Length: 209
Image (cartoon, rainbow, N blue to C red; front, side, top):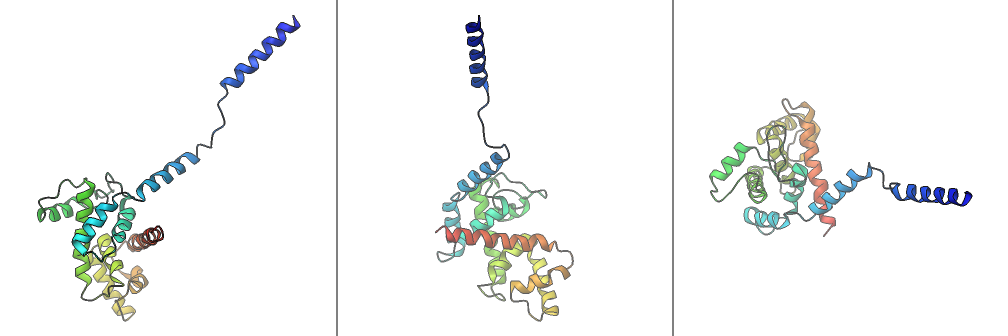
């Protein structure tokens, strides 16, 4: 009787152990791990595309990692990203902007195709780069180019006028940052943060090579 009872108790213990869920990492760690894996995949995503169109529109001497950093800041390199205002793709282009660019390049495909979205974004950057070439040094020009991409060149020109009045100079991005809160009709925190984010990504990419 006692032997049978002991065997029954042992069997129930083994069954309980076999059906117990094994210990796992806290569920809160899973999203972080997934984000880390996505970031690692993005580390080399679309590199050939960024290289190709940087060379085409800016020449072989220009560092393509500037535009990859911009793509990371815009969308995390997500070709399906859509903003609350309707900007789309890796480079977060508005459909009207993309249509205007594609009208000059009939070989461009759909806005959500990452190759053409990246190409159009870099092509738009070239327009902004040339826009500032007469008044801004090459060292300062990336910040003006990216700031204009985010806020529009008209907004940055208004910021320049304010900087000229307040600081006495508008040739450096630091001057724009200094007067940004005084510039009307500008969501300046977004733009200044955007430029800084690109700079951080660019620095990270530089350290990886």
